[in-house]
Amino acid sequence: MTTLILLPGLACDAALWRHQLPALAAHDRTVVVADVHNRADSLPAMAAQLLAEHPGELLLAGCSMGGMVAMEAARQAPARVRGLALLGTTARPDTPELIALRTQAIGEFEQGRVEPLLRANAMFAFHRDHQARLVEDYLEMLGRAGAAGLIRQNRAVMARADLRPALPTLACPTLVVGGLDDALTPPDCAREIAAAIPSAQLHLLPECGHMLTWEQPDAVTALLQDWLA
Image 1 (tube, rainbow, N blue to C red):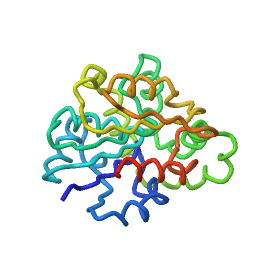
Image 2 (image 1 turned 180 degrees about the vertical axis):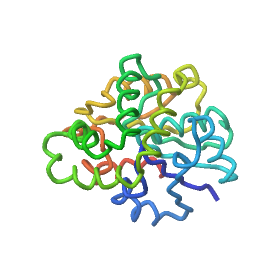
Image 3 (image 1 turned 30 degrees about the horizontal axis):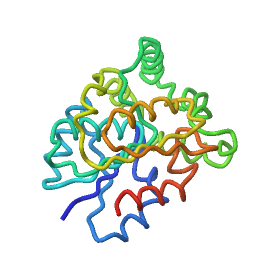
Image 4 (image 1 turned 45 degrees about the horizontal axis):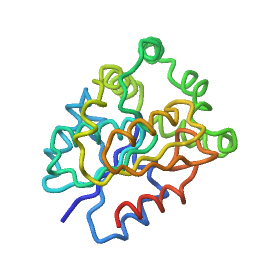
């Protein structure tokens, strides 16, 4: 039986999929929320660990960094990955500017200044209409990752390779979803992925920032159900 694996984003956990899990679990298949991003130090190692722990054919749905891991797993084992759902993610490597920002953030985390920095940047993850009701949940989730997790995962994202050359080789049914108001991973990133993967379907959600599964939960669930069908 094909296993559906949900891959959270950086410093996120199963709560990221809280709205989608009941509907996705209703399908006649095994559903797993992966945590390899908590246990490996690079995107290739995360993908390799995922593939080793879950034999057989896989359907991979990933948000943000989880989407990067999903694309890397498909690159490593194209015959085993039977479908991809890529939400709020990019195939591009980090720019020098982003690397500088992450390096500065890592320094703050190492000094124990975790909560103030997360709170100062949390608003950028959401469309303005969703900030007030979701930001505290978001900060609580990131807090569960702890300083060590934030440091390790930011380093992994900073060091990632350019995944764009591998995209045209991916032949599995692919859903690409982005937020039209995503300030962290702009819609052009989703458009680029969808244009490169043969027959990929692209959906850009209005009034939606980076946290698609929370900001537009019903729309994301419906898109995932259609993809699974």
